[in-house]
Length: 101
Image (cartoon, rainbow, N blue to C red; front, side, top):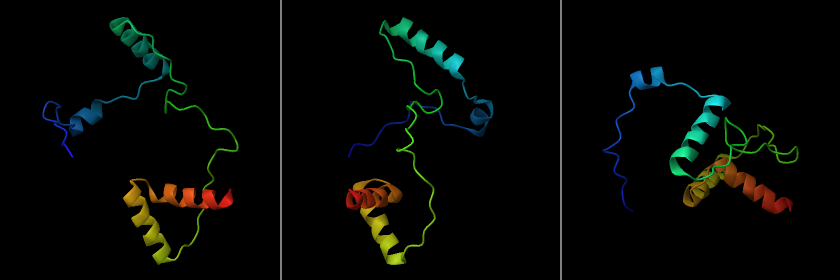
């Protein structure tokens, strides 16, 4: 696998983070319009300025659950998830959903 060359990107220092600011919807819209003007291409406005994702419906929202799992089961989920390059909670959720269908 080819490595990415980051040599042209300055390092992010503590000073940089001290001056960083979260932008609100007005500045995000102004940036979108500036990019449209610069590129000459239309861009769709973001649905949510914080995440860029549409809100989930009531049947799609995840519920927070605490549960006890056997250490071997948890280790297996971690190994399988890492192999698939996904999070272990995502992996466990997919397994449960496949059996619930």
